[in-house]
Structures are given as structure tokens and as C-alpha cells.
Amino acid sequence: MRQNLRKALAVFSAALLSTVPLWSAPQSQAPDPDKVACVQMGLLNALQISVHGDVVDLRKLGASTREERLAALKPSDLVVVDDALLSDALARNKLRESPTTLLVSSDGEAGTLATLLSMPVGMPEVFVAIPQDAVGVEKVFGPAYRDSGLNGRTVQYMSSITKSLQEIGGITRIQAQSEPSHGTIAQQVLRQAGADNKTLFVAIAHHERGRLHFADESSLTVAELHTALAAARRPGVVLACNTIDAPMEARFAAITTRELEFTEISAALKIAVKRAQCVRGGATYADFVSIMSEQLQQQAERAHRQARLYLTVIGPTLAVAVVGGAAAAVMQNPPKQDDKKKKAGTGK
Image 1 (tube, rainbow, N blue to C red):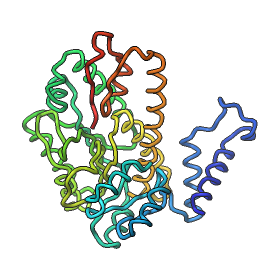
Image 2: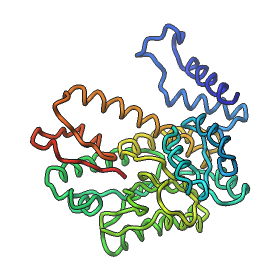
Image 3: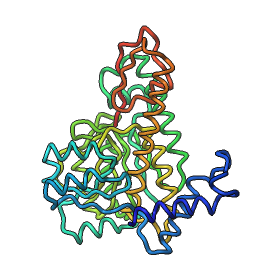
Image 4: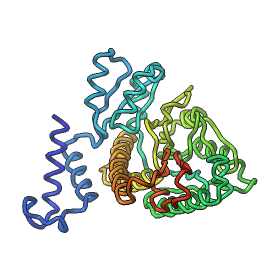
């Protein structure tokens, strides 16, 4: 019922912003989607309906009921899981296959979860911990990136991501510092996450085998970052690949169910921050996670369509291996015929 009402309000919001009837409006006159979303959120606020999707708590459901709920998930749903559920390989795979990119993991009581979901986002603090130069790229992604061509393309890709993140308004952006006086990047991340600042903390980094890896060769576990957030009672989102697979001891942040592309992260974050600003009285953690999860899914679908088009254009004779996040980099810098056996991977 609530979902149908949201859809109806979305159509109504678009109609309010259209200069001519929706059924006859040319595509060039279609209303701005961000403005439509803002009007829709205003209507939801006025009707005292939550902006975020449905809260789907899977922690205490039986196997059959859980299967039904998983099958009916929507990208904007707030899915709550715990360690016991994530230790089930079958359940974890089902979550990976779902349209929900961000999960909220909590082993606490209902009151603790409700407190987390209702925390205000404020002006999000975004810690950007991706490599910026050739040395950093090799240290983060491995020896395969000593190859000058692959390294150069990846540096170019990372530079474009950094620029796009700099253009996002409504956030406090913090760039990892390489000077020893600031401590290692891992120390910088933990120090910032644990600061006495109740605004949303967002970390953007590369994740592999339970650890976040940085350009100075320092690293930390996802669990360590979540523990720092929990100690500071601060809401957080770690935007990195497959943190659903990272061993956990304490959680106070959303986790990801799949590989992410840095291009997806940047585009989704820009929209999520803009739309969170439309929520009357300020967006909550639940609102932000819901919007961000939905936008990540939409960005992934758009990237998939573009990749299919690209492969159609270049033809079946060129085999391109794209592993975890390199699609945008490879598409912007197509490999030469003599490079076609090289593998590229800049997944987070």
C-alpha cells in the first residue's frame, strides 16, 4: 500500500512540474528528476509518511518467510541483517542477488537499531581514500598495475573520480594525506570516523579480503572502522566492494552486497546528497541509506546498458576482460588489439 502511494505521488510530483500534460509532453520537456524527487518527498513529509523504503528485518524470520521477503525486495528497502544471518552462505548469496546494494547490519536490540536509523545525516563527511598517482595505484591494486599502460589509464580514471567527488555540493570532503605528519591513511580514517561529530561519515576506499587498502600501503579491517563508528555513536556508510564478506565484530554502518564502480559511487552519492537535502527537518540515516542503495542500483543498471552497447560497437573479435570496477576506465581508454589479453580491475 505504501509503495503504491509513493508511486502515485511520484507521478503527481512530475505532473506538478510539467508545463504540459504528461501524456503529451515531449521528452525534451520532461521535468528534472531531482526536482520531482524533492516535490515527492515534500508530499510524503506532509502526509507523515517516511521518505525511506520499507524496513525489512530478516534477523528473526524463518527460512521460508525469509525467502519470500528476499524475493520481494526493492532497491530502496532497508534490509536489516546480523552476524548469524550473514554466516549462512545461502542467505548471503541471496542477498547478493537482491536489488538492495546496501544493508544495515545490527546485532543490537530493536531500540539500538531504531536509534541508528533515526540519526540525522547533517552535512555528510566524505573521506576519499583512493590512490591519486602511479605509485599509489600499484600499492592499492597490486603488482599487476606496474604495467605502464594499465597504470596510466587507472591513474587517469582515479583523477576523474576525484574531480567528480570535488564537484558534489552539500558535503565536507576530506582527502587522504600522504605526509607522515598526518599519520598513516588508515590512522587518518579511524581518527576521523571516531571524531566527536554526529554527522554521517562516508568512507570511499578499496576493499579486498576484509581489509581496506590505502595508497601508503597501510590498511585496516572493515570491522575496525565499524568499531570506531560504534564507539563514537556515529552513523556511517563504507562505500567499498563486497563488505558483506568482511569478518565483523561490531557494526554501526551499512555494508555492501556487491562490487561497486567508483563511477557508480560518485554519481549515486551526488544524487543521494542532493535528495537528502529535500527532506523536511533533515534526512535521517534510514533516508540516506535507502536513497543511496536505490541510486547505486540505478547506476549499475545504467553502466550495464552502456557496457553492452560498447561491446556491440567494438564487435565480437575484441575480447575485453573487465574485473570489478574497471568497466568505466576501460571504456574510456579502449585497449589496443595487442593489449586484449591484459586484465583490468579497479574494483573497490
